[in-house]
Length: 329
Ligand SMILES: C[C@H](CCC(=O)NCCS(=O)(=O)O)[C@H]1CC[C@H]2[C@@H]3[C@H](O)C[C@@H]4C[C@H](O)CC[C@]4(C)[C@H]3C[C@H](O)[C@]12C
Image (cartoon, rainbow, N blue to C red; front, side, top):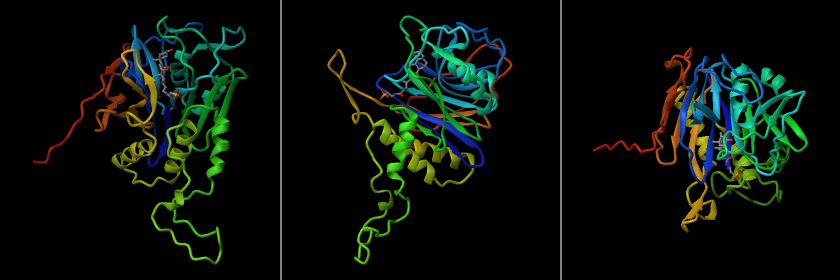
C-alpha cells in the first residue's frame, strides 16, 4: 500500500509513503535538463525540465516512483492492481510506456494545466522496461502548487479526476475513494456534541472523540480517510522545518509498521510483511527532496539546485538507512 499527499504552508510540499515487502535499489535521483531520456515510441527527450525524486536507476535510466520538476510539478505512482490497464501501441495517441510516464509528464509540463493536455491524448502502453521488470499496475497523483489531479488508465480508458483532497492511496478507483469519504463527513477534530439523545447529559470522556469512527486499519480505503482527516485538519507553522515536520506527521498517520500487514511466507518460510520503506516530502517550489526510511527516522535532504541542472548525466544519492541517534550524555 502506499499513500501520497500534497500540503500547503508558505511553500507547497508533495510526498508519499512507499509501502512494500521488499526494496529495489532506489536512490534519490536528479535528472538534469540535458540527460537524454530515450522513449520507446515517441521521440527521445533530448532536453526537458530537470527533476528530482526517488528512482530505481537501471542501465542509466531513471525509473521514477515519485518526483518533482524544477517548475514544481510533482507526480507519484501508486499500486493499482487489477484496475490498471495498459495497451498496445495505438496509432492516434501519444504512446508512452508506463515506466516512462513520470519522466514524460515532468519533463514536458510546468503545471497540472499543461499536464491535462498531454493526458488527454496519452496511451499508456504495456511495454516492459526489461524482461525481469514487467510493467507495474499503477495510478498516479499529479500536483502543482495550485491543484491536484489523479490519472487512471483502466479497461474503460484514461480518466483524469480532480483531487480536491490532495491525497491518494491504492485500490479501488479514485471516484470510489471520494464517495467513501462522505461516510465520514460528520467526523471532526473538535470535541463532539451530543446529538444522539437531546436532553440527556452526555459528555466526552476523552479528548479526540470528534474523530471517533475514522478508520485506523491499513486498507487502502481506510488510509484514504485517515490521511484526508489528518491532512485537512493539519496545523503547522510555515517555516521549512515546521512544514516538513508536519508533512511527515501526516504521512505517519498511515505508515505501516513491520508485522501489521502480513502477506504470508517467503520461500525460506520467513514472514512476509508490507511496511513503509520510505516516506518522502519534496518542497515543490525549492526542489528539495526530503525523506526518512523505515530504519532511519532522521530527515535527510537533497537539493536539486545544488547540482548542475544543465548536465547530461544522472546524479544519484544512496539512501541513508542507518538510524541516527543523537546521544545527550
Ligand atoms: C510497488 C510500488 C507502489 C507501492 C504501493 O502502492 N504498494 C501498495 C501495494 S498494494 O496496493 O497493497 O498491493 C511501485 C511504485 C513505483 C513502482 C516502480 C516504478 O514504476 C519504476 C519501475 C517500473 C517498472 O516497470 C517495474 C519496476 C519499477 C521499479 C516499479 C516497481 C513497483 O511497482 C513500484 C516501486
